[in-house]
Image (tube, rainbow, N blue to C red; front, side, top):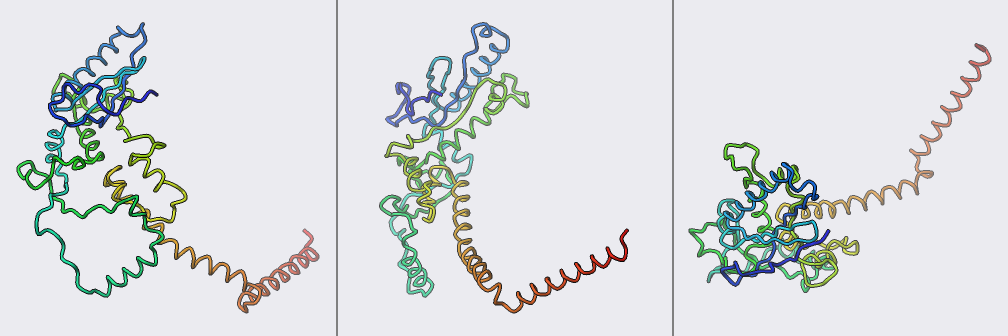
Length: 311
């Protein structure tokens, strides 16, 4: 399917110099000529018009793009709408750096020394800091517009792509498409997709997986590669791209997989030892001999039964 561009073509409606990146895309298909004036087609157009108008009322920027029979509705969420919904969703966001906030240098600690030694021994499994630069430690707090001075909302990376997608999806799932405000089922993008009003709704990746320069390509080559199976995972970068839930999942999966390695090594040693000593071990030999004796006794008993009780 044709993919829309990742930025707005027309920035005339923008009231700031902020680049209009595309945070979400809605897709719908034109009906056939014979069905274009049918009641179902007119109803779909009405629902689509109400839904998109309500999205604009929420502050989202929409731009339409057409390719043959497919129409793409590109959605951009401005910074002020992000701030409003970050407060509604009670998102924890990084705070500004203030003077005197630096952490004190830790005193001598035997556990820290042990961890340092282990880290040097396992240095070959750590991600390359030149590729995945360690994220600076920042304090986080529940976002509030009344305490906006605590947050650097004007920073380019303050709202990550995963947060932008989360907020847009939250709005899409709760926006109405029915004029009847008392309707219990007249809202949500999923219902519109199930009714065929839209074909799909999805966020865009930040670039091509084969072209360097995007976080997607970096994760694909340096994390999702079979050659990197033993390496630690760049959890901060995974969280920034996919969200906190995915970051937590892969953090647990990596920890679980690494903890299975010692158990697998011990199991393999035990299995090889068992194979090498199966004929020299006294207990194993005794069990095998006893099985042979029992087998011979059962065979003699079977033959005797056949001789004296032919039926």
